[in-house]
Image (cartoon, rainbow over all chains, first blue to last red; front, side):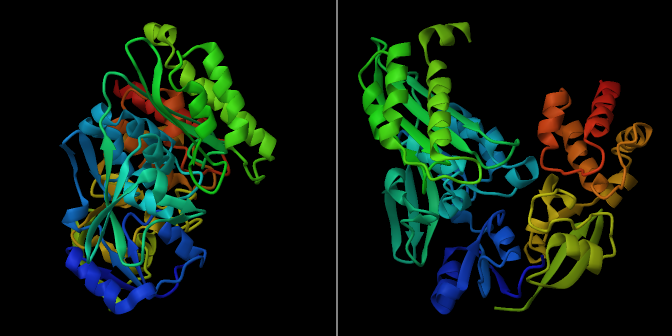
Length: 291
Length: 157
């Protein structure tokens, strides 16, 4: 379907954005890669009067390493995330997630900021930033504020973004030699949103015990679900078949998946258990030695 | 909030200047404003891939790009790609293997396949299928398309 009628403004910098948002309020909608927003316009699911194009705003660009954090500008496209050397080294989970996101032509336009702001419950990047314990940097005319990723996603397609605020960047704690991360998912077709997915990040201490595990399920709730009970089943324990099984069992207390077109809640819970084993098995010393 | 935006861009090597409505997407801009009808408007919400074109060297969904946003951009369509000769062998392979039936998906399919030839010279059949997974063909069952791409890659090695 053709898009409805709307206005268009290209912002050269943040001051242009603040002026447009001040003048047009809720009638103005910021657009970056547009890979979700423009499709929703075709379906008449949103009705902005003015699109404010932020793709040329320099403050929202770039990937930099500062003080133990990798700062990824909101305008970073998925394809860039997938081939950036700093991301590959310091936040490999994000690079691993990229092939799961839609298709090459969409990954060339869609941005990390857009994916986080839209907060689709089955999307990969929201789950990844929660698993990485990242911080979402928000910017408004009044300045910057930082929100931990786990607090950023507040419900179905809703976030901590206030009117007049944009995502400026995501700050990810850099991976160390002890960090292990993985993303796995089940989808009916390559590039589809996941029926169920899991982003996992943890550290292994010198004794081989799990430290600060974060298992985040997606496609099974209103947003990324940090599986607290499964995490507790792993914390401080050696990673073994037994501790993996304990984490799998604990998922029943963490997840209350709604039935959807793909299947009933029981199936989604089952898939998350399978994915938990699939991800964690990769971190077993024997599996790592074999790899 | 201006209803129209002036853009100057390069399309298939030619510089063009137009005033476009904000609601004009790139495929309609190419087809209706420039008369380049090789790019097809299929689903118009980013699913089918029939509108695949290159913007600044990378493939995109033409139906999910605002024409108004393309000031200064370099766009290559199937017409430009064909004229350049970059994928003549691929197009010959499509013909030889009957990889086009109704032909609606073919321009987008060739644009996406050209991306494999450029960036993934070592792609196997699984990688070819993965890369083309965003381009729908309702006729061929994909087998002949994958054959054509694989044969072209093989011949170029």
